[in-house]
Amino acid sequence: LAGMSSIPESELARQRACQARLLDALADPKRYPHPVERVERIDTHISWVLLAGEFAYKLKKAVDLGFLDFGSLEKRRRCCEDELRLNRRTAARLYLEVLALNGSERDPVLGRAGTAIEYAVKRPRCPQAALLDRLAKRGALEARLGRRLVVDATRKVLQGLRARISDGTLAKVSVEMLEKEIVAATEKTAELS
Image 1 (tube, helix red, strand yellow):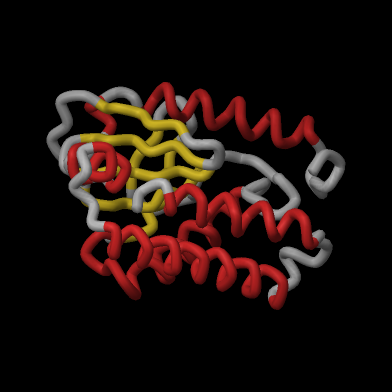
Image 2 (tube, helix red, strand yellow; image 1 turned 90 degrees about the horizontal axis):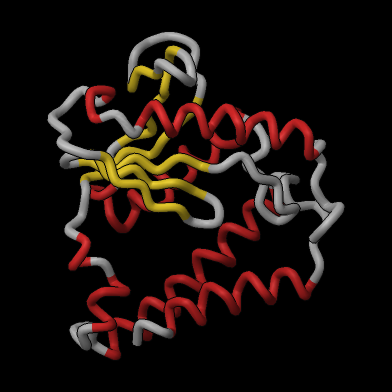
């Protein structure tokens, strides 16, 4: 995937440095408009999830992997909106809103009117013991549900790829890359069945 990015690495590095300062500021429980005792951060390869009180806030990392492009604020906003729209079809109560973060990276404000510096998907916080990987490890996930998750994950990956191909955001893609995406999604989900 090296060399596939349309955004210079120096620009992505600048954005990631800004996001690092923003995340440092968002680690302060006083930043949230609701009661928060402490903020927990979960890092994935493309996002951060901030567990703050009764809510979770998912921010996209400034990355451009060729097949996945969060390399600009506008693209991260659009991806947050897509995540909300697509997931509300099957889990409306779990996807509350796309929230604009305003102010500055060192002094952010959640949801205030003004120029956005970043976007987040706001969700209710789920008990960690109820997460699918935890249920599977305890043997509390039925095989039938696990198989259904594999099928659903595969469909979602394919729908996302088709959408990115049709809107032009995924113009150059190799069969191997598509296969890796599908296999990764199905294997991850298959581990749960």
